[in-house]
Length: 204
Length: 332
Ligand code: HEM
Image 1 (spheres, rainbow over the protein chains, first blue to last red):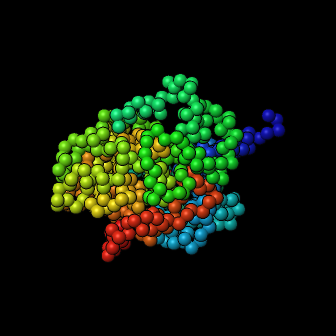
Image 2 (image 1 turned 90 degrees about the vertical axis):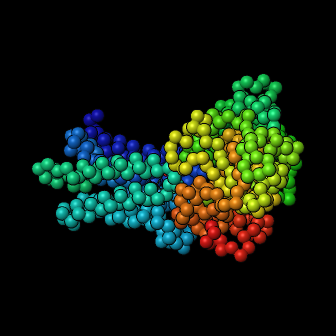
Image 3 (image 1 turned 180 degrees about the vertical axis):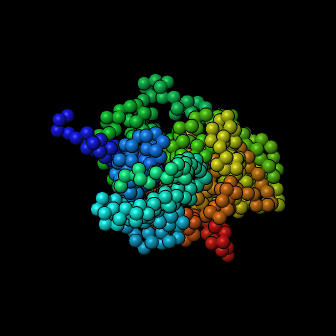
């Protein structure tokens, strides 16, 4: 492959991989594979993919540290942006297919229903991270401030898990599994022999 | 009801059907279902995109020849578009067979519905009563009711059954009875969902006796002209169309008349969210979601705004008097 840069190929491959769930959902929606209540299925699937990418973003550092596998870390920015994009699609699907752009009703829901309030809060925490995901932001803000800001991913992920817990009716199995994964990922942050982890982080 | 087992075989074992039966089977299942079961997926794909994104052919299975003789009750039936047979039988809440909407259709084949008897308590006719004795097949009525789930979706289903009031009169409840409690079968060998404690099994529901005696209350044994599929609560279920769907308890094995208000499953699980009455009421929101609107399964597409939910699910004329003087916000 003389004309193709290997790193770029990996990036492109990961990008396509990230688009796959959305493409699959779109195809499934058009061919009626989403079951009897496709709207609900779509909203839920998009939310769940947002959460999965969020956990994958959080897994980048520990996987690099403990398994010496840096692929995720090198592409963490993109994975994090996928989390945000799926959260945006999730929110858009909710505004469009569930509320039909009834903004008054939407505002009432955000204020009155705790699970929506928390979803919204999580989304608002992810928003500045997506905006400042570019290298320019690191330069403008300074690395220290940028890192501090991007720690918002922790409370955001916790809020998403609580969002999930609050929306299920009786069967807590799924939110428990995702919650346990998040707990594990957060736990690895407490383990810092030598305090060198910070320097090993790549910006972005 | 003795013919049930024979008919069941017709529905579930297509592979054993002689070829002469193909046409009625196709009629019965409806085009979509027929195509799906017989593997003509290419054809299905050719016709489905337009339907599925822009709204489905929800009436596909509504003009089928009935196999269960019944009298059509036009007075109590809605003439709204009926939800397709496929949606009615694949999108179910029946936690004894799993908490996913498609779990019951996948898992409920293990339910043995024949023979079936119901234990009666608190009435003159106490003890085990066989299904045939409880339900007189000559009295069967077809009624097309709206069904509104607490989760914000709804269907229109042609049920077949008898008025609950007739059965109660036959059973002669004790004089001091004020409530009637229903219990679902709880057999872990038949019901894989019981292995997990998502609810306090067995599933229980109850009505005030005057609610139960209301002409709308139906004890159903069938839908769409045939016996109930297992996932829809075979062989005997309650249908109370002005209440959220979870009140319409499935696969009933016990009917108990009592003076005290019985505890009910969802109310036990979360009293703040699920009241004893659980009448459909667009003005009283579930704490987690609005009840003002609903999505009609099968009929509404992505681009159809949700329709407004009606007070008592549109049955106010028949049932509002039951709650006169009651604060429906406190008694939700
Ligand atoms: C922006 C505000 C948000 C709103 C209004 C919102 C709304 C919803 C709604 C309506 C549901 C489905 C509830 C149901 O069907 O009963 C849901 C489920 C879910 N949402 Fe959100 N959400 C928001 C933000 C987020 C974010 C930021 C994430 C994650 C990145 C997320 C992840 C999830 C997950 C994982 C589920 C459950 C999916 C499942 O059941 O499999 N949500 N959300």
